Length: 258
Ligand code: NDP
Ligand code: 8X3
Image (tube, rainbow, N blue to C red; front, side):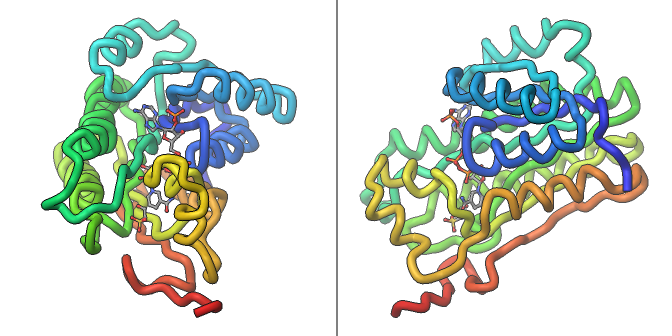
């Protein structure tokens, strides 16, 4: 097992769910963390907690991954102590709505495409050249079971996650011959703020997604991501589909109260 001690790990979408769980696990492994999300106060709180609990050094990037100009400015002027990023975890993402395509809200489509695809691309574009130059690095993208299987009314969200899969595959091929690794981790149902965001704060509707089944926890996925990041340098976990035992497909779940 390789160590993440003193490695610089950048996590997008670290203010909640899978990203926050990754921050905690990599902090326990003594990594140095660059934490991104839009909610600056939440990031500050998390960083203070990690510093208190594990002595973790954190650097905060409270920006929107859709904001290309800010990303370019920030990523090209990181303080030298933080500029040699070893691991990029492209986790920031969201779904908006669950509507038939013919009735879909164009603003929702744009938000998902701009965040899940373009945001991931921007981060990758500004960070991977340094990895290639330094001769080490690992890009870990968070896809979804939705990228393997399009479910009814999932249309554009599923398309964005299929794109994450295709981009991961493309990046892996383009980096062949360099030591930089690319992994795509594709979770099934994980109980986070994901459904609350999808249904714009409708808690009851969001809770129904997980009702009667045992979903994955963000920590389950953080474990898998940490596993990928700690393989010896010649081992690349290229892709992993990780689902709850109560799920066998994007729309096939076993609910105990039905
Ligand atoms: P959460 O809603 O709990 O977390 C999403 C994170 O992304 C938050 O930290 C949010 O922070 C951040 N984020 C969203 N939009 C932006 C943006 N424009 N710029 C920067 N950060 C942003 O959901 P999850 O933890 O579940 O989601 C993490 C990833 O996992 C997503 O890519 C999601 O698609 C994927 N996924 C989730 C599954 C699930 O069932 N939960 C299953 C499969 C994949 P903030 O709001 O502060 O910006
Ligand atoms: C999140 C999982 O099935 O709700 O990507 O789309 S699902």
